[in-house]
Image 1: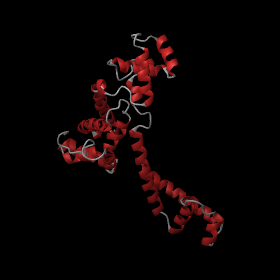
Image 2: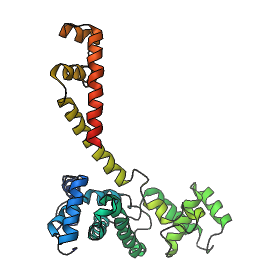
Image 3: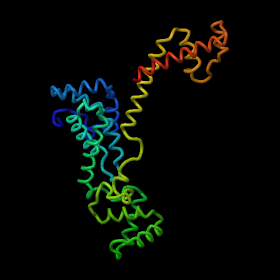
Image 4: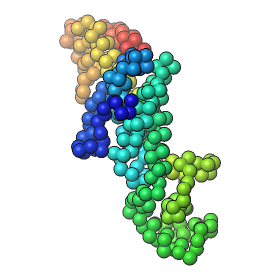
Length: 284
């Protein structure tokens, strides 16, 4: 499938920003649409169905790849590798397991990016920020005659350079050109392993997509709920709850409809109850 499904290319002629804007325009699939497309591909090898599944999740790859910029590798290359993982995930996805594709695909996307990082560990930039470059040059100068640094030397060097101990250890590892494990070997090494500083601690892509979809469904549910109200109830709800700036008071609406403020309150409470039920059904 990787050779058949044509995808936008982050390394192509256009800019990376244009690519990101393009993939963000592909619509997010509903659960029903995703399941139907996955069955079409699984049962009939429908490549158009597979293509739609891939395109709707390209934004996930972009979000995950953005969290792995710590080695200075081109973001376009990280996205390209992640796209390969996404296609592998689509090929193996089983909609009958009750798991959304975004959750299943994240493992495959990260696995491909991790492999790419490991293959390129030796050729990436040793220092990618001003602070790292300062540490790099100072550390090279200080450790010329010291060999491998012990804990005392690391502590003294960190104090002299005004940095944290783990930053000295990390830079010494890079200078030594050693092959190290991407994942931590034990709990104490978690902050020093590459996975500790490669991944962006910001929100998980699955959570961001889930929040986006939930917001969309809530908006649709609100519109459906409002459409279920009679004109007077809708006017009261919009004036009391959906107006930007000053909201109408019960007395304002009582004067408008020539009824008591208590009657307006009763209509409002009844309308809110109907809307709550309608929105719950829309989000179910």
